[in-house]
Image 1 (tube, rainbow, N blue to C red):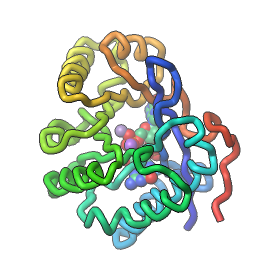
Image 2 (cartoon, rainbow, N blue to C red):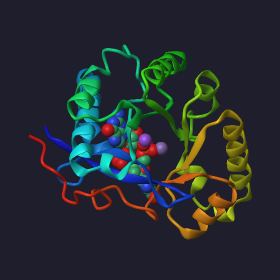
Image 3 (cartoon, protein in one colour):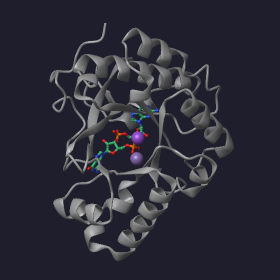
Length: 236
Ligand code: G
Ligand code: G
Ligand code: NA
Ligand code: MN
């Protein structure tokens, strides 16, 4: 089956310009990532995961992401329990063919309840970091995605899960927790992105806490409308 990608801006709150775009899988009939991923059989999952990164780079290159100066942020399956070199070969080949510099690519890793071996994910993240890719820790503060990976591997970016962002303007616990994460990340030299920002009040509260980057419907929905090439480019 075929699929596409949508791109959502991650905005630098100092300049209000896109710092990066996150690639998100979409079905051709507007289905979300969960519905598309549900159609992938378990034995095809890692091959599909690779194809998603290739498709994201192809579409991003054609849509003019590089010309905006922004990075491209791409998700990895949570159970990245396979060889770092084998699962990156197609991505590297595509990036080279399209002159997409590897230091403009960020890989998003997350922990989940099925993740068998966080040490292995940390070692994969470290291997990619050595290869020059940016690494983001996704869904930070949600469920199992917390301090475990952060203690094992220092990413460039931490992405605060929208659970901590939603209603933060009216929630003292959320402000205290997020304030603590911002302090911790500042000491470690890690940039913090707030995910799922939907209201101006949430954004103001996040700014007051020293958050540097934000993503969410308030700042831009997943799509192509924020990019130089506004129509989804066809991929042969
Ligand atoms: O955009 P949406 O809410 O449908 O995405 C839900 C989740 O699906 C994301 O949080 C992410 O974990 C996963 N996802 C989206 N796009 C990709 C992708 O290209 N590759 C992988 N591995 N996961 C993705
Ligand atoms: O798991 P991951 O964090 O990679 O996926 C982010 C998901 O959140 C995507 O499916 C995206 O469509 C969705 N999303 C992005 N911005 C917002 C937002 O402001 N509100 C909500 N509810 N979802 C969002
Ligand atoms: Na993500
Ligand atoms: Mn997330």
